[in-house]
Image 1: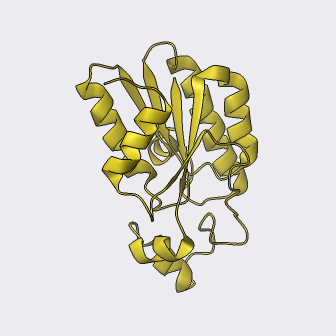
Image 2: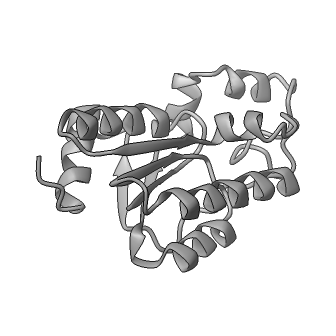
Length: 171
């Protein structure tokens, strides 16, 4: 099963995916993790975000999921994946082995959290390609997601319990 976390930078994708991975491993599930930033580095992709580089990175992650999905109980993906096109493609190729979780968070909260300092840089005009903040690179909220977790309203443990329950994962 591929569990695909999508959401804007700072929404909590990595935090929740790491917590879920830990919980699953503690309960003897085999788990493989794919993080958007890590895959980008492995593929020697530019850190200058363009629509094409984002799409290429997302399609590369989908390829890795297809190769790994039958080798593990769970493949956990944490990636902004801002375009509905790539998320629909992942759902199409992985079929019933795909579970999408939209990690939703208000822009106001993201700016306050600013875990990587990107929002401050965008506010200061130092960067103009922050996904979901820049008009050049919008974040397209999912039309279809299996679960929505609002991290500006839920704590980490509560969110993990909801994910486990929605996926019918018995621990």
